[in-house]
Length: 364
Image (cartoon, rainbow, N blue to C red):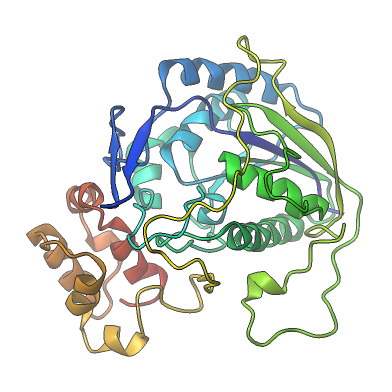
């Protein structure tokens, strides 16, 4: 046994943002330091909630050893007081696999800021583990609810297996800070219970609440046969009570006793979230070490990135972006050659995901 306890929390009360589904444009009245419109910071009320959450997390037994967070600003901002309260005892890791859920769309949802910006510019006090490799990077085109659950199962399997290997048999507790839809999916993947109707309110997801799972022991055994047409995420058998690397029992569900305002902004699924004319059929999850998100590898090898980009974003390419792509695509180039100023410019223009994938998927 290694990971014995998993705590879940949803980010605290955030600023709002809106989406024009016909154009794919996001807008927020709470500008984020990352300059990404669907990445607002916490509201003042949420900052207070994060402090109340930190006090509660410091009292948990068993105590937290590892914190895994979504890369969105509001999640890292939520755990910041807790990390300070825990006096640097915990290891903080960022994983896109437990990031936000967006429905299928004919446009690309903006991606969160890069790990480098998050760790050096926005949250240096968190001392985010730079050696950790995220489980996967979800498609910017969105996903169905079924794909969300498969994505979460894959990410959980990666996280739990990683900590199991590091713990050397010692009982360990981890905290996952994520978003409402993802939190609900995590609960289902751990317990192995997928309700008949996805809208069932099985796992509660109020802002800054705390949910706790305890591992019964044993790992899920893979089935004797595998579907060669299914992604690795779809191969993981967690339903029918098996759970990911479990099963797990939920012994605390969305507790908010530590919050002065109690449980607020709870959320549940209400059907597929599809935008425009997006197809909602199955698509492969992209494990970043396996294949490129943006096209065939030969296109990258031939240097046809401009054509790849034009097919994705029908907008002019800014000089800062084209210069950055040219330098990153040169032999031996890496993300460190992209200046923070260039990266910030690309963030604001929605290009940061493409730049990250030049490195993530070995296209340099």
